[in-house]
Each structure stands twice: as C-alpha cells, then as structure tokens.
Length: 281
Image (cartoon, rainbow, N blue to C red; front, side, top):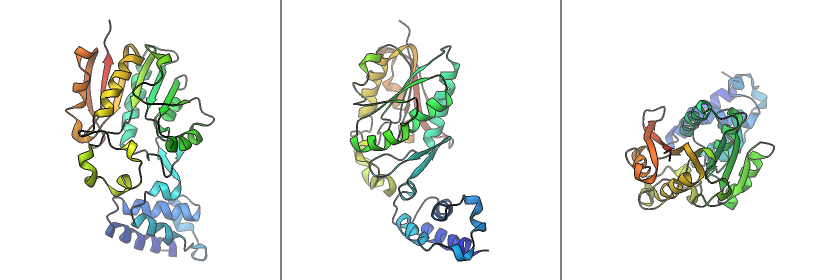
C-alpha cells in the first residue's frame, strides 16, 4: 500500500467518527481531487507526491462542510456542475426523478418538446433534460440571486434558457404550451429544522430547503403554475420528501383539472416524487 492509500484509510476512519454518511467515498474523492487523479488511480500516486493539503480538506469534511463545496463540483447523471455557497447541491435521488421525466418526454409524440424546470438551483435538472432529450426546448427558472451566479456558469453554452423569477408566477408567455414541467422545490417543514443533516442545514440556502409548516407551501403554488403552463395532456413531475408520499398527489386533484396523479419510489423504494397529467378539456 502506498502512502496515499494509507492516509485515505486513516481519513476514512476520521470521517466515519464524525458521522459523515459516506466516509470511504468522500475520503477517496478528496484524495483524487487534491492530487489531480481519478479515484481509481490513487494507487499510482508516488509517496513523494503526497500533498499534505489533503488533511486540510479532510478537516473541512469532518466539520460537515459538503464534499461538493470543497471540490467546487457536483456530479449529476452525465453532468459535472459547478457548485458552492449560495446554491443547493444536487442529490443523487433526484437523478431517478429526472430519469422518469426523460422517459415521459420521449414517449410523447412531440418533435421539439417544451420543458420547464422551476426552482432550478444549479441547473442540474434543466441541463440533464436538454442533454438527454436533444431536440427539447428547456426553460429554467430561479429566484435567488446567489444561486443564479452558479446557474449562469453551468448553463453557459447550453440550450437552456434561464430566467430569474418566482415559481408561482413564472413564464406567463408560455401559458398552455408546455409539454412537461419538472421541479425539485423546497419541501422540508419548518418544524423539521433540527433534524436536517448538517451539510444541508448549515450550507444549502434556506430558500431551497424549507416551505411552510408542512413543507408543501411552494408545491401548492407550483400546482397552479403547472396547470397554467401545461398544454392539455402535459405532465408535471414534482420531487418531495419520502415522508410526504401520501400527501403530494392529493394536491393534484381532478377538481383542480388533473388526471392520473400518482407517487413514484426512488432507488431505495421510498416515495420520492409525484406526477400528474393535465386533464383534457
């Protein structure tokens, strides 16, 4: 075992003791980041090339600073995104939400589908949709100026059209034209603040996390926006907490003009997102 791998083993134990959920992964990611190699190449780093700054990054992760803030990058599906203070770090569970949405758009008989991503944050969802549905027209909306600094960096050179705005009254010029609307909005109840992981609670912007006493305030607003923007037969996809599985589909009722409202599980078989179709007139 070379020096770096021995240090990674020690770092893994330190991160585990600090309660970091994925200590081995993070210790290796930080080692690769500091030494400018891929994770599978750590064994090739010469002992003489070991960089002591590795332990500075481990100390930051030990204090529960997000891995992505330390490296300045987040991976999402086939994307590498720039992230940091002021923007929500995309999570792996959202990848399955986007996968469902991509399949839904591909199944539509539409040559150039029109897609809207509300509360886009880093732009992860919008960029993934644009990349994996090549002829799509994708609009992304974000309210926070701090987040927009990162969104603009990520969408530069892409087909994504970025707008600053509130999800509750966004893009009136697209009313009745959108094929699919997708969002990963804030959905944590204010009462759950103390139970949120330090990486999210202390580093993700509050605007991207919390939404009223039951966590569903903005989702209720997005339901109205979705109904306004979607064409008849268009689809809405909304991520939510795994504890809200029975609640979100009930926001998209037949009385409000929806059909086929349903919940869907993530890869851990927990309810993760709701979908509905705008009813035909």
